[in-house]
Length: 378
Ligand code: FES
Ligand SMILES: [Fe+2]
Image (cartoon, rainbow, N blue to C red):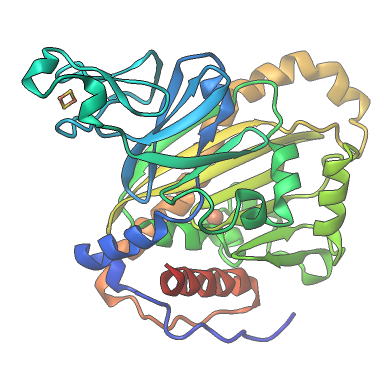
């Protein structure tokens, strides 16, 4: 085990953005330019399908319009009424307030009683604020940035791109759970990006097997992101990416990817050789509130270890049990973390900007270095 690691001292904006609305707004303005996970392509499979999401607290929506996916800020150009007022749906872009209608480019094409405004909708030149969107497998990301500014999504995700593309290639729509968390989004992410709390906080669930053993695990850092593999292979990330690219990767070992700013993708064995993928996001709402959004689905790879005969034989029954139990299990594990974050938020003004970090919290230090860089860069 390596000794204590240097803490990025002090953590940038810590704890200011957890308590001060102005500092929080400034932070979010900078984060809006960074690729942020929005949702799955499964929710926009058919022409006209749309779903709502947020980028750095700003409401946005993604919509399939013919062959293309488009994204816009969820705000009418007329008087800023939200165009989408549910989590998902299907239909044209028509504002519910005065029925302005928009085309796939976000340009207004119909205005009731248009003469009140001018000769034609075209001359009004009113349009929605577009967001740049791109996909990695079935994961949709977006950002408020003019196309071509900043890295492409592929470049941003680096070595994880091919892994995330493969790991999200599920033929079945992911199941979804959500809840409001009374804690800052970054506190929530901190609980996801270190391995020191498992045996204490997840004593009944994920942490049953004790602390991770360094000789059996490996950490990876790529760009602003990191990963933990329950496998000591120092080339594990490169190897997994190559095998995902050529379709030969098989489910083995607990693995978790943390993608800056707020996405965690875990590959976890739930029972015998039944592997699942759990995708978790803590979307910022205010300095002291976040929305947890979590999706889960069966991992889209055969297991590396062939399932034992009793696993194969009982699957019709155990699949049913897992289907019923999984939402409770996912909620239970995440609520164990949420409980910690809410307690920390309750004394947010007293949080030290210079925590003491150990080797199992190394990725938290990396994360904070990325955060500081993101605040400087934008
Ligand atoms: S606010 Fe949307 S049409 Fe008036
Ligand atoms: Fe945790």
